[in-house]
Image 1 (tube, one colour):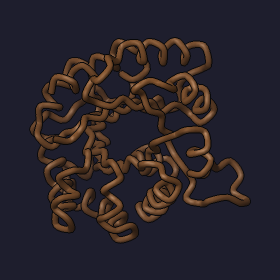
Image 2 (image 1 turned 120 degrees about the vertical axis):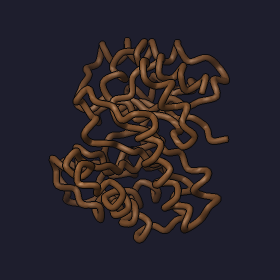
Image 3 (image 1 turned 90 degrees about the horizontal axis):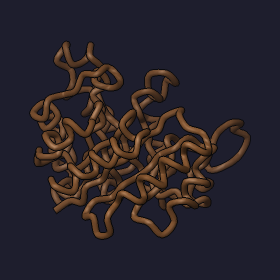
Length: 252
């Protein structure tokens, strides 16, 4: 059975004192031997502090982005080696906001995916379609292309130490949520695409749902056979809301 993973993407939110209170509440609310993993992804300036605060707990830390380059004259960039150096275990690559706002191509995302793994960090590869793409019936082809870019660059073996997150872009920050059945359909397709390359790896890879998961809808989504957790935005900024999703993961 695949372990559940509930990852909190804080996006560009937070400051020192509220962060400490949030992390303390989350760490205190995770029972020992919970049977699932919690992950916090704060902005770059707070990564080291959060890594230090969660030491000795069941909570892991990840970054929201990474450079595809190891080092050099890339002002403002952060390498995977730097993230590993301060204790990050995961990094999000290809988030829909990075693809849309910063013009990250699927090929650049693939390079970031590989850079993360080269430093021993687990990439969380985000894939997903916009509302226009869904209404045009292009969901499957969009996600197939985004996945294929990484498969072609890194190979199926790389997914043995990676996570995939399905982000229906139309359900992020809009109040809309894919029904459990809609989400399951896409998760199943993702697993099938990987399964064409290696059925065992496809069966073991964690696929998260990243479209406005909350405490109220988490149980229904996590009851689906191919949904292994969530990539959580707004609900990860309040300890009780985040832990409610974690509780649903524990019971699923």
